Structures are given as structure tokens and as C-alpha cells.
Length: 638
Image 1 (spheres, rainbow, N blue to C red):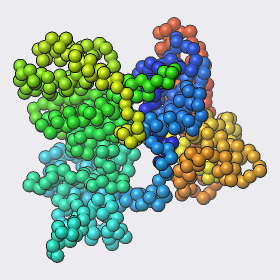
Image 2 (cartoon, helix red, strand yellow):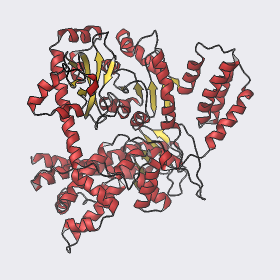
Image 3 (cartoon, rainbow, N blue to C red):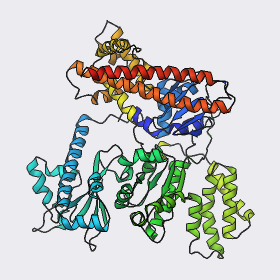
Image 4 (cartoon, one colour):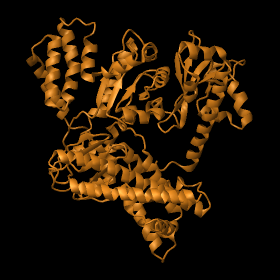
């Protein structure tokens, strides 16, 4: 991942725009508000798409872009300055981040291929083991379809099964160690009769763990023999598996999460699988019970409403409270950069997600609940409590609320949460609720409240060495498509003329920087266009001589993504044309859908700009018709 992509993926555009003073409101999956770049306080024609990290004004200025473009336009700076500013915000050192070396990328891909082969290996052993299959089917109520869908398997007894199976297939012993499939004993931990290297997973039900894009990363394993320990075992940390940055099931849950408007976090792999089988596909699980900022940010890209539904035992309750600090730092405290005209730093604390906790009844796990009554799960999630309410109830449970010290301890933990809430009415409501629960006068809490407020106003340390790492969020599909298309054009700039001619044959406009939504891509495309329009230098020489150092690093990353390009130019041209048509169609569809929302809002406000929106919608609808015709002509030639 390039420096620019790293920064791009770490910045939440909704937060960035909100901190600039734009009051956004939810409109479907997107957010709308008044454009900050021109005078207009009647029509909220400014739209933010959190999924793609982009924005657009459908009003007077008719501009759009990504986080870089927003900062550039707002502060009147160039791309390099915007990159440095956002990199500092994201905790990224621009000069130190380098593109993943091709040999490292190839090695990691080799490990993923091995893990995919291991999925097949474990699955074969599962379907050859009637006892384990019977347990999953009858005890756990899983169908063969859901078992296949999640790639479940079984690791047989024995210490050298994997070596016997994989070495003849051409894999090396070190490959199996690097993936975490084999463990290595220290020299003083084994006798002559024991091997220093042995299968990590033995006599366990296996769960393939994939990243948010569906790529294999590692395995989770559950015991079969109740006397074995530990109950659950994960792959060790490897170059492609960091358990704190992955959520089990997210590759399958991303779309359902967006459709449902919320994500549900449960504790176990089997809970995730059982709930998906029951039709609740917006469910994921961390690698263990402790939540991390990385995991929360992965979810935050798809939804702002997150429900914690952990197991009802003591460990589960502790996990909720343990995850609270991570949740607050990941979602609540994101107003650090808010400069006034004098350049003074304002320290803001705003709630950026609706984080709730569901109380599971009767000491049942989620899979047991849906086995008893599928509809009950829906009611439980709908009844999830706000995090402050849950913390209050959890801390008070089983405590003697007549004990002054107990009251002091509970107040000390709850008041900072209340003070973090951005809405004054919410803060008052929760303070009153806390006072009633503790049976104290609300005024007795004001001293603690003032102390908490003072701490909240204290500026944060800006030393890079003391900044907490800000996690990376999922990369959206459009970014990948744009990167591929630009990588092809960098590798074969001469295709640009042929693309323009093809588009003109279809009655469409030539390629332009506006076909790319991301600022760095627009800048790179402009250089490609200049390269093919000049005749003094060879295209590649011109490109490299007209790129900044930052852009050179990005261009190398884009070239690496197209290393295995189809050699035939005609095939590449056809593929490239189809992808650009898809990009234009996605943009046009988003615009048409958003214009419908704007028309509805405008009608309620008096309808003065409805005609403008209607004309724009007609233009985009005509464009969609032309794009669809072009796509049909392409496919008809195949």
C-alpha cells in the first residue's frame, strides 16, 4: 500500500467534513449538508459518501473529490501540503512509508495459497469424520451448506500430518511455519523422541479466517475433547495475520451490515456461523473477546451503529467493559483537528457512533438463542442499550449502592463517559439517571463533572512518538478499480488515444481527470494526458520526469498492481474500456439516487431548486443510457 493510499484509508471523511463546520445529517447510506464552498443556507446540496470517502456539491460550485481535495479547496493548499497535513492527522510518516516490495508481496501471496490448500485439507478430513460431522449437524444444528460456506474443517490427531501432506506438494517446511500451521519447540523443550516441529492444530474443529476482502489470513480452532486446553486456539501472528486487525466473518458480513444499518459483534466463531445460517448476516466476531480500534474502524466504514452481544458469562461482561476504552478512543474522540482563523487547536469530543450492548437472556449463547427462537434474536438486538446505560447497569449489578465508596467508584467511571457526549440534553439526562441510581443529589456530581471537563479540554500531546497508532480501514472497490486503470495507463500510455476514440465512437466524452474520484489519481492522469500529447520525449521518460517524489512512489505501486498484464493490447483495451464505463456508471447512478433525495428535501422546503435537480437527473439518466448501450456493444463483439 502506498503512502497516499495508507493516509486515504485512515481518514474518515465524515469526521473531516464535520470538523470543518459542516453540519451533516444522515440521508440513506450517505450524509448531506450545506456546501462550505459557496453561500447557500437554503438547500443542503453537499453530499458525503462515507463508503468511498468522497464528497460532491450538486449546487452552485458543482465540485467534488476525496479527503485531499476537500482540504486543498478549504485551505487553499496544494496536494503535497494536504498530504502532509492529513498524514500527520492519521499518524503516518510520509517519508518512511514505502510500497510493499514485490518479493514480499509474492511471498505473502504464496502463504495465502498454502492456507487455501490447508482449507481443502482440513475440509476433507471433516467430511471423512462422521463423529465430528454429527456433532456439528445435531449438537450445533449446522447444515452442510453453511459448513461448506464458511469452509469449516477438522485437524486430525497427530503431530506430522501436515509435513506428510504438504512437502510432497512442493511446499517447504518453513512455509508451513510461516503460515502458523506448524509450531517449533525450543531446544530445551523436547527429547530425542520428539520432533522440534509439529502440527499446531490437532483434533480440533477448524475455522478459516479471512480478511475483510476474503483473502486467507489464518485459522481459528475449537477443541473436540473437553479435556483439551485451550478451548479456542488461533493462528500465531504472521506477516498476513494480525488478530487485532481482523474480524471473523466480515468478508461475508460487509454488505449485510450496510443493508441492515448496523453491525453485531458476538464472541465465538460458531455463534457467527449459526446466526448467518439463521438469516442474521450482519454479525462478526473478534479474535478473542477484547475489541481493538482496528476492528471497530473496519466496522465504522460500513455503519455507525454497532451492537455488542457478547456471551452472558463473567468473561463476556468484562469484555464489554474492556472494549469500552477502545470503542471510545476509536469513535468518540475524533475532533482533534479543528483550527480557528488564528490557527489555534481546539480539542473536541464528539460521539461518532451509536455503540450499544445487547443483554443475552437465560445464560444462553447466541447460537442457542436462535436455535430456540430465531425471532428472539431480533428482539434482543432491537432492545440493545446505549453504552452509557449498559455501563451504569453493569457497574451497579450486585453492588451495595448504600456504600459511599461504591457510589464514588461508579461515579468515577460513568461521569467521564457522560462528559464525552456531545449533546447537552443527553448529558443532563444521563447525569440525572446516574444520580437517581446512586440515590444522591445531582449537584454532588458537578464537582467531578467540572474536573472531567477540564481534563477533556486539555490539549493532546502532538509528539509523533506518543501518538496512538490509527488503524487502517477497509479499502473500497472503486479505489481498487481506479488504481488498476491508472496502472494500465502508466504501463501503456499509448492506449489513452485508443480509449478516447472508442468512447467517441459510442457518443461519449474522452477520458478526463474527472473520471477519477481521488485527487492523487486525477493528478497522475493529467500527467499521462500530457505525456501522450507531447512528442519530445518517450512517454515513460516524460512521465517519470514530471512526477514529484510522492507521486513516483504511488506510480510504482500502481505499476506493481499491473505486473501480470495481458500481453495483447486489444484485450487490455477492451478490459480497460469496460472498467471505465463501469466507473462512469457507478458515479452516474450515485448522482441520480442522491438527486432524488435532494428533490424530496427541496420540495419540503418550497421547491425553488427542484428544476435544477431535475435537469441534472435527466443529464445523468441520459448518460446511463449511453453507457449501457456502449457496454452492450462491447459484449456483442465478444
